[in-house]
Length: 474
Image (cartoon, rainbow, N blue to C red; front, side):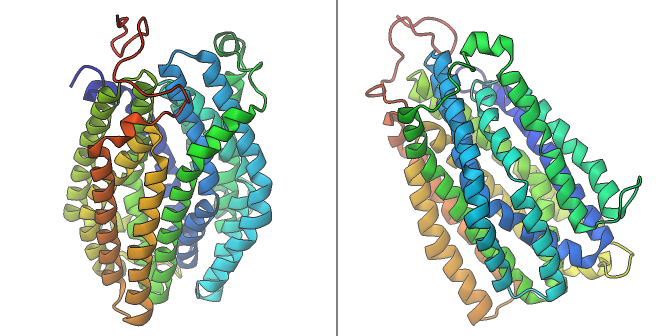
């Protein structure tokens, strides 16, 4: 439980991250629940369009967010100016990314939607949600970059409050804009997308205000270091780009799966989207644990204490699998409750009795799927925290496309085996992916990676450097 990298330390760092990601989950869940109440077409369109939009920009998010790993290692090394310098490069990268997203990835996403083969009424709403999400991506990119300054140093409470403020604002905005309450026009899925963009402006405003504040500037020279640093920007790209490519490829393959399920008909597509939305509600806290694993491993690697970094990774894995195991039990015991949240009585919506026979077996698959996916997220986060991003990228690429995508195309387009077979293949993919990350982390080659360019990483910090317990190592 206690000591460097123990459960207590991991929980202290992870809890605010779990709360902030849980608030994001609640926002997304309410978004889709309101749309399910509003229109059967809207719930069929929201998940594919939302996942596709994030897929188009997630690589940029990952690189901008990887600045937090540099912050964690600089913090562990006792270099406060390095924390400011690393954050500045991440923010500059986020600002430079937005024009690229609009010029290249917005048109690309529209082509993907056109290829999906979804009915015209669904495609029209997908296009609305996707376009607004892409144009409104800049605030989220900047907040991801500057959040790494706080979370990388273990100050995860600050990011928690900033993200919670934005996410919780989104819920009443959804209700007002989707249904047309409080003087707002009834906008349906367009209102849901606009509400998300507006609420996404809150975190960067809060975090940038704190980052450039007088107290932070005195301690970390955030104003003086906010300039382009060619060498450090290059290292951010060197280690961050594989992380971005990994996330983009991983989500691209999963987006293909989501789009392919639209070929099984309206009820099957709605059931699949609802099951994935249910899983998102429970799963997003694991994203917080993955970030915590990256922070703990990064800080101990910065202190040149790789054994404590390894312990932190294993501790985070224990927490993640225990949590998802409990959630999986609720999938098996209470499917009616979950399905009832997304059923509606308005014209064009789906009733619970129609959805339950299709959603129930998907929840059974999710019970095992989510447990293994927790290991994926945590172990990938731990490896990234150490700088082992190239392996994460290579393994994800090989399994996502050589195994997952190839299999789904055969199952859906050639053999036409149906929704359950497609979901079972996805579950098998997640198991294989987790096995590779587990093997890599257990081998420990990541312990010798030198993220900051200081020379060979030793097992102990240099003389006089504070250890994990705050005592100087002689």
